Length: 181
Image 1: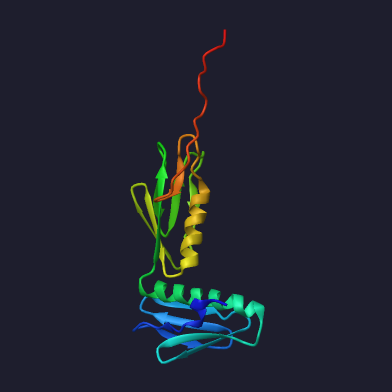
Image 2: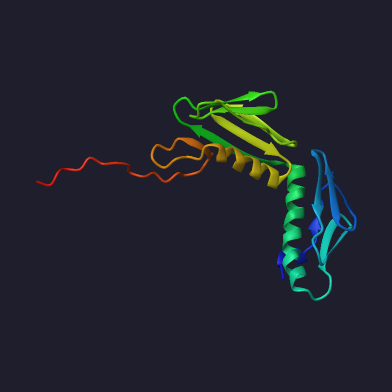
């Protein structure tokens, strides 16, 4: 059983939590998020704290306890401060531009690649750095992963789209060897 899931989670000032049978709705200054209540879990908000309990003696309920506590904490952090990921573009002639709400990449293909930014995500471009931000941790991470998937960094020259602090293992490439005579 999750030790963190058993402890009550404090609800910060300015955040309103309502529960129904299958959804927890969290409202804050930055927006609204919903967290699904997983099977075999009972959620209860009282005295500025959220508690989760396992219904019955069910193994899946014990597994879901820590998961729902973590999802709820992620929603609280997202509504208080938000989440952000940064991506860098490396390569000669590689660039990105904002076109309205969407992004246009020139990353070595014969055509520019258009990327539609999902609702609830904010994308900012500064030279060859892209900053993805939003209140939903999953959506921010998935959007950053989808952008990186457009042109992954290759191991020989390191060209492509990578996370800000990502280390790309480089390969040696072809070496000119001395002929054995």
